[in-house]
Length: 233
Image (cartoon, rainbow, N blue to C red; front, top):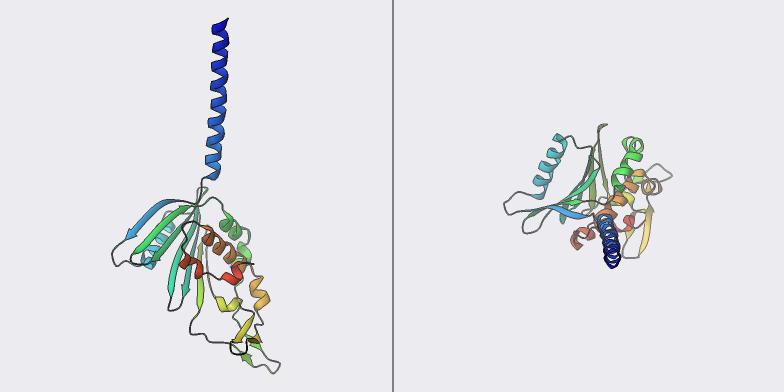
């Protein structure tokens, strides 16, 4: 009798421990994501751009489902390169940047917001763009602003359909063509402001920028190069 009770007690304890282990494993699986799966530093003279293009070509040759090449440049300051890609249900971001050396990180993404946004709005993205920051007066005279220092983004998207190329400056999303810093007053309104900020391209850029900023592996220099105003929308 006593042996039977002990045996039942042991079986109960084993069952409870098994449930605890299963629950713990499930929690670990749920938290998994945004982990570095590849990290390489190039001490040679190879630039981040060269490594990014090599990786891009390798992904294209391997028949990757969707590839989004994102280049972020601030003139006379910095360049950052990112490749978002998906293949066989898995999503990754490849990061490339220079400091004293060239760095390449591959990170496993926990969600597919960027790929999903592109797929759902493919037709709109394919057949639209962002208009230049311009204002036309009643007399037909058009005004713009040639900036010496500015930042821009370049996207090249490859999918099973075809490829899409996109370029826009941060100034294209500004509310005004120019700003008088001495008086603190805005001067000329950007006629294309509403259309640009409400475009599918801006929506995609915001998702990309938020993803980059949220990654633990993103440094402050990368974050400071993003379009902070538009990204918060």
